[in-house]
Length: 279
Length: 310
Image 1 (spheres, helix red, strand yellow):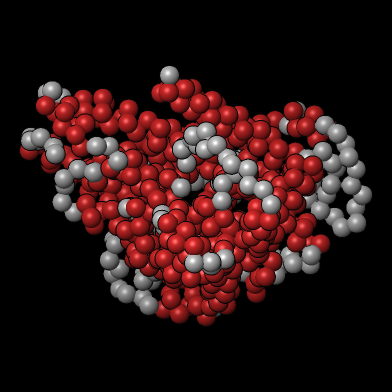
Image 2: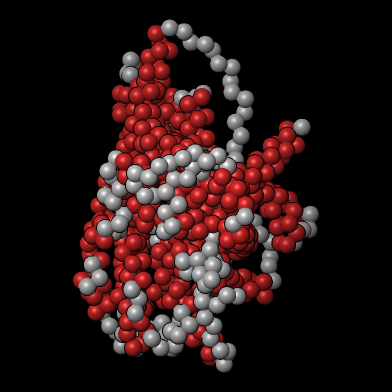
């Protein structure tokens, strides 16, 4: 496809690639290295990625002393429940968006797009009031309901892309045999949709797991804090001595998302976007 | 995102029981998702707009009065808000454009015949996977004046250290770098998808005509990517304009308000000063700003489509 390239151009391209890799990869490496460093080393200006003497106590200290274990539990609970509810509620509507034409589809698309560009800051104020009047503010359940709603534009968009990729002829055949819409949904669509459901669920999990702003506003009790809020609060209490456990906690908070992105990376760099965009 | 629906196929009016049954089915499919959307998204959105015209505060049992354009008139003279608005434009504009430029370079490298690009593709996704709070924590460590690797590396060359996030002149550029860092993966993926949908024949034809790599990029890749580039940049700008977590954890708007982007300013007004009516008015101004940008984009899009079909 490409014509012959002079050697110096190839060398330059590899140098550029290396520069990108360094820029994009260095922060995570630095965090990983900091999580194993002793307090003394952390407070020095020495730039070494491999700790001089390995200190594993940062991890235990992060989990025990800083109450991150409790926050991790809250995060897992909120993310898993959000994931399950969001996918269950989105599937039928995604199907309707992909298959039924007309005003419903138009209204759904407009809402999905609007919610992508609307400033959360304007919604969060009345949302806080709505939750307060439902007595759901400062509860994990209230946070889950909000997460379900806020991830839905994304889950709907992705799932309707997957539904649209299923040939409608399959449904027509089932319809000829006298199957109703819900039978078709369960027996024809659902089995074919499993890969799409899994990918969508994983993304929903990650976005709930990583979310910061809504949790910051909606949770006040420290025992309800999710991991991002707990990490941030421990940053506020950052004496010079806390950097090691903070880095360890940050690494622990990143691992689930990294694993899921690793699993999904083919979909990310490949067909998923094309499929979801074409709709 | 950018597909524009062709005029719908002529709809045959279906009459009678079948149509009604279908409508019922459609309602049953949609209602479970629609309920939370209405309660937690549509209603708050509308009442957020309405709150901007009241003097509501967070205090319980306080009287809420409709005060018309009062908040907006007050806002016109609020120089702190407009400073913040300007910082928001600089922040979002710089991040969107620098992200585009960096992501374009990376996407071109990943679309070439280099080795190791499989590995690079995976590693390049790291910033996307990291929670914003963790991103902010890492970069606070990197920028730390007394123990950060950035000042450490500068000291090798005898350059004195800088208090990156604490200094008036470096704070905004420093957070912009973090914004670009976290935005590169997503933009790269979108640009790469666009590049891969360009038919190789186009490049071959240009190469046969004697066009070098630079000219092929300028005359083949760039025009074909135009819609993707514009859409991605507009979206990036809006997302960055609305973003909150990264800067909140990095600087909390400091030093001296130099990184006080509008969502942060509005948040502090609502939840620290507890003036939610006034804060909602600010939110409304932000919505108007975003709508102006979006409509410019849509008008441009519409003109392009007209040109193509004409």
